[in-house]
Image 1 (tube, rainbow, N blue to C red):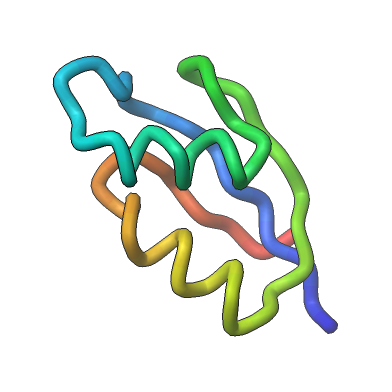
Image 2: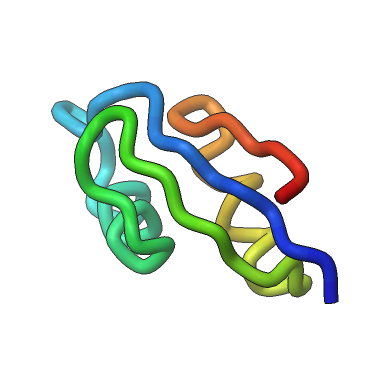
Length: 59
């Protein structure tokens, strides 16, 4: 599987609980933190859910 780099760009303050939980599940939690994850359908769905808070690049 291909890897993607997910970087949190915006805060989770005043966001719904499910979006905060998704950010945590991706391994993020503070602005400018990045993680490399496998590009699976589950991860793609999580990234799509919080796409307004993160930036995605090919790793």
